[in-house]
Figure 1 (cartoon, chains in turn brown, purple):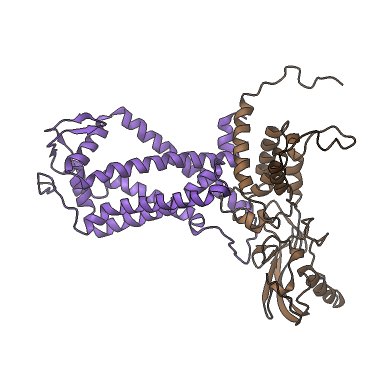
Figure 2 (cartoon, chains in turn red, green):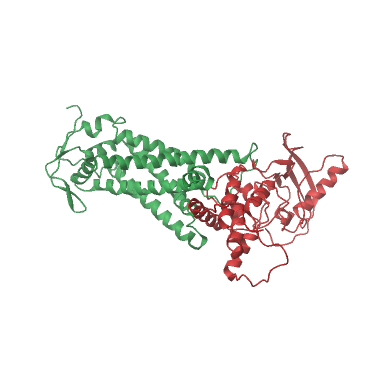
Length: 270
Length: 257
């Protein structure tokens, strides 16, 4: 992305995927986006185009957005073939029109994955990620007031690494960028973020197995170790977490075979 | 789930299967190449080595079946994973194809894999079953008499004076066709290219790769693949270039003589 701020307004042509609903067939429609301020964000540009469409009585382009500051992961679409558009480590809302030039043809598509059905136009249903999270992306802890912060000591390098994984905003760019629509980077980030901390140890094996199996059931593809995911990730989460999850999964699956189970399952005090 | 089910049913399990069978197959091709490089020595070496392998009898079959099982599992896992990957993209593909950093080698794995599989079948038809080039097949050439004994790890395994199949002549006669040699060179080149991604990928799948040594791993994979290609190239290359000639005591081996 160019760091220089230019002030000269310019025009581009948008080629946008329009699809009325999940079951309907979609197609590309071209729109002229004129007199754009180079310092407006990509989403602001879409707002301007939508204003014009609304005034003309046309259906505005549906796109998902929320925080518009790169931390919610809602604004997910594929711009010129790259999830979140040109630029490294940004979400679509952090993409500025100065990344484009006068006369550019910009193709805007929804994230393409069987597990992320198109709801409308550029909006996809990414609740498959929620299902993976519900399978094990949590710790079972005593509810109540926050515990004393230093009760469970965490070495600084571990805390930093766990935080790198925890920066995942669940936008789905990894799936969209992957040649096979695999969710390995997302699952690896969620597995590692808790698996690296002492609080996550009790359920570590159960977590990695349950999350990986849910990922399989939801129809995501398989990792071919090409690292497109981490290159497209708005938080630049490393594919090293995938290697870590593979190791974790292997040891957990071997351990699960020899796991001793209580004869009085379901019992217990209280 | 039992551990076997993990390997065959889950995404990560199947990839582990790919990686582990890949390791065995890499081990096999290294041994195969080292054995074959004996062609540059006196014919006693390659012919004695071939005789030694045949003398292993049932053990040879155990090794062959082991390699066959690995090939079948590797191809099965690749096919299943690829079909799932195709389905995972959904009905609509991207209108704009864009690659951020996936290497050419990684994007060509399926194509290089298919060519290598076809090559392996041809190679067996050529030198093991003798159906591709019948006139130069070892069973149709004059027998070779060992001039010295062949030793493995210091132990004499084939005695001097033993009548053995003339593998040395078969290989040289087989590679005298530039078309056949070219096919071997291209196929082995594609195999080396396949391994370039395969080796790195194997480490990642088993969880033994990290950015800390990813650069080193890449260099090791590159050097290995370049060396593997070079040494394989020398055999048909030397024959086509006329540097490696039939040297056996029976200078001519006319089929059907």
